[in-house]
Every structure is written in C-alpha cells, then in structure tokens.
Length: 217
Image (cartoon, rainbow, N blue to C red):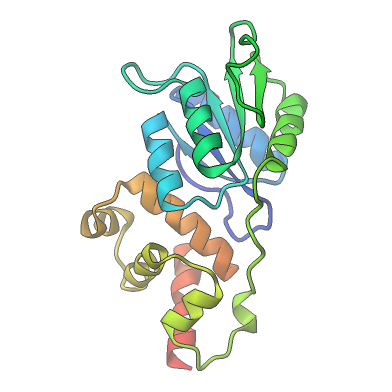
C-alpha cells in the first residue's frame, strides 16, 4: 500500500499522501481508506510535485513536515501546492504548531500522534479549499461507437492520461509505460488512479476491457 491507489472506481475524492516513513504511510492510508477516500502515496515532496504536475485531480494533500533530506520540507511543499494548484493541505508534525504566517490560508496543521477522527476532519476541511474532482460519466453511458479519443475527451482525460490508457490497453506494465513516456512509476500510478475513476473501473484489466469494448463498438 506504500504507493498504490485505493479502489479507484469509488467516488471518494483523491488524497495525495506525502510521507517518507513506510509504517506511517501505511497507517495514514488505512485511516483515509476507512474515511472513504481514494489515495496515492509518495515518499517525497519532489515525487508529490511530479504527480500533481501530471494529474492535478486531487481534492487534498496530506504531508509530513520532515521529508527526505536535501529536498523540500512539508511547509515548502504546502506553499507550492496552495500557490500553484489551490488544493487544500494538511501538514503533520510532532513539533509545536508553526508561527502565524508560515502556513498559507487553506493549510491545516495536525499534531502527532495522529488521531483518525482529527485527520479525517481536517482532510474534509482541506477539500473545500480547492476544486473537487468533477464528476465524470460512467463508461456504461458512452456510445459504443465512440472512438478512444472521443471517449477519453468525454471522460476528461488529459492527453498524457490518454497515452497511459492506450499503453495499458496494449498490456504494458507500469514500468514499461514509465520508460516509454519518460515518467516515474509513481506518476504512472497517479495517472491510472485518475483514469480508473473516470472510466468507473477498479483495475487495469477492467479499464482495458472497457476501452476495447468501446473501440470495437
């Protein structure tokens, strides 16, 4: 569960979790899944920015303050997320709350140890700071004569997500797709999470079947 998405066909908003500790990352994922959210989890601020650049369809970001040495910390990440995408952020720390002005409006501080109820409450608040993922038509509502390009447009996929879908339908693995498109595997997983939600499916096999069904008409 370190960096995999939850059942992506569910309707809960996507949350991006940024935590370099494996155990806490799993714990946060379990809490958010229990709260009905879909998620993608990464270990560094740099990976988080790469994922957001590729697929900015997240309702909220949850990040630890202390991340990988030499990279951005959670405060710097939160500022970039707020300024560039307007997504609400929850910042976690075992230290005292930061001084006023360190966190932009729409950023919430969560003290460790993490309590599930508090986490879910703050994530809910953060969701209202940015645009929620727009609803997308279910695959069953599409005309069976629709081409893949028209189909992807109806599902509001970006050109990059259309490329990922096409390569997935060719049976390529996440690693193969990453190499062919010059992406990291984390970014491919983020694309797939958004694609699955758009198609109303929960895995790559179902996505492939839906795509092939519509192509064949």
